[in-house]
Image 1 (cartoon, rainbow, N blue to C red):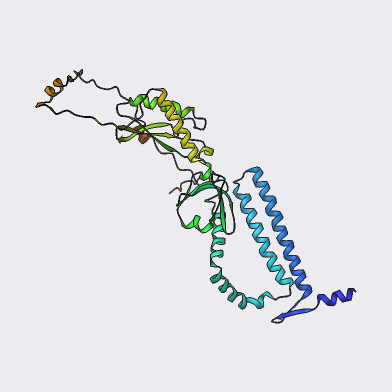
Image 2 (image 1 turned 180 degrees about the vertical axis):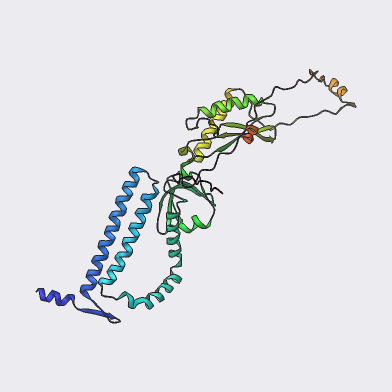
Length: 341
């Protein structure tokens, strides 16, 4: 029976050049390929669990996971062909022609695969980053796959973005290197409102929001007067939120807008409404003050204007603040000593 099994495994299925492909060679090749692919899956799963327990955006573990997974699969394919009894050197010409055909027919897949490797090794985008595409698509990067990058938006909807889109198009990484950003929250008050009162109550409201970072020399909560509208003064709240709040921009802006509205109402500051001033120039032949007197609307006598007290201008202070020194891309690298002449 053993001899019969050996005879079965030596049955030649076909010949490829000088190499004979047997039943035993095919079985051993498939078994070897299965073992390598199982090892790649096991190593990738283990490293992924370790990465999720330590830090979801750990770049070193993520790169190791992808390199070992892809590398074992490629090695398994080469070992399987060798076990099959095929001389790889004799397939050089055939492999060249096959490569050209695959390059033309599968250029889209190859393009996305190479783009994925570029994203993994370039580290411009890492797991856990909050990114925004040129078309307005936003979300947290969950995985960089061989064909597409998986992104989850704040509605818990998973989006598959081709890897090449992240390289070829403009992309904003809102949480690059784990840093927060400054946001602008617009609001309006009625013409004639006290600017200092508006500034004080809005600043107090913004600082009471739990995800507002405390003021530092570089990160300060401010209120800017940015323009005039129809019966309105246009302001912007300038605030630095926490990194987690930055990843949920709509909810963050809604929270600050709610706090601003409560603060303005509590301080008795009027919200602007459309209004029109009517000027009476003539009334039954009378003009100017005579027309107002005929309507029993004598112009009020105003006291001479006095110079207003100086107010705090956050926008001017922001312009006078020096820019922070740029941080090096590799903070662990030793400083370069200047060369002496």
